[in-house]
Length: 459
Image 1 (cartoon, rainbow, N blue to C red):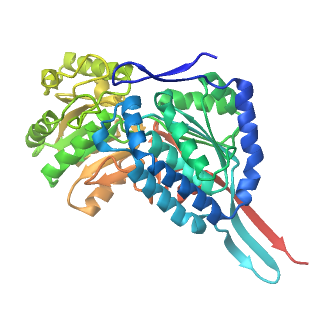
Image 2 (cartoon, helix red, strand yellow):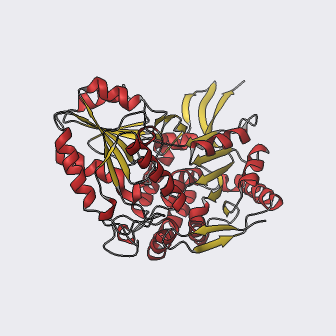
Image 3 (cartoon, one colour):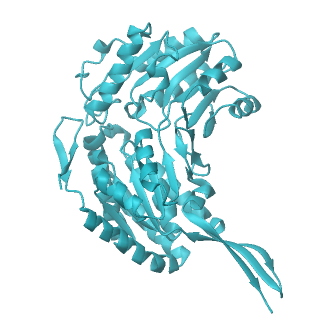
């Protein structure tokens, strides 16, 4: 098997290299997971929760090591630390609601009938995780899957393949059996072969639309349930009654944080004509204050993109937009670290429209287009003029207005006066080409379990 290389965006070096499993070895891993599942599900719920929380605690103890590795693997500046704040919050919440969510719902318990609905683990859960938030996105499914009694096989993105090793190290050290949680390195062909052979009872994939389509093709005819979080082009809408400074600060951070490589990052902004000029002026000042550079430099607020080919996509979108009449407001010369490769200067574009790729296709980089709108109707039309639907950020001072607009936006989550955030009590879901299924909240447990009805009669 050809080794898979992890090329660091920091300096272009080979940071790690792993040989993927053969098909036979991968089939054996899936078989071991299946064999271990019943015994794991038979353990008390409290025991499973305790072991999962111990595994997460062991991850927390690795923070200095993990932060350094993340910088090498995908370029996030070390000043921002790891992802364990969100990991802990999501683990704690899902642990807290597990007993109530997974408890049977009694319909009748009499001297004649006992009727109830139970939830049962699906079996073997397969997680195909992305590189942009490699711990958080894994935890979203891993924690409820294990707590609910499933066994889990994790295949991490090649760009962050050390993440799976760290999670395995922490969870196994905490006492979770090796066959209950397995981290594997697989190539695409082996991954698709396993899915096609019904090796898994649930597949969770976070990644590109093309990747999701490949997963669906592999699963065709198997009836394997899928959870797919795919592309996004999340909009922000700044109404006339918005708090301008708060909108600029949050939306620009949502556009630029993690070098724009956020599933729910802000990629397009629509501003009411009364605030447009002031918003653009403040947004430019905000972006110019960023420091592009080596992620190990304490002053760096914007690191390299995870791979130079990702940066090339963003550069092409910007160039095409400018050629079509857009105006770039940031001089790349202000960011001397821009090397034409993974290190990419941030950009703010105006005079943009929906004929441009930068406003319609996922950028996943530090660029945002800003358009002027005259009213809510125009903003709604533009926000919905997208193949994607993950989140939308509405800026207003009125709950009812945000809810009324939100009901008309084709999206999975509606934010008012915030952006780029996951609340573990709310379902993380999308629509259109963003995919299907949901994680977190009580519905996250429903994704990794199935209903089972009991109709018991005395005679």
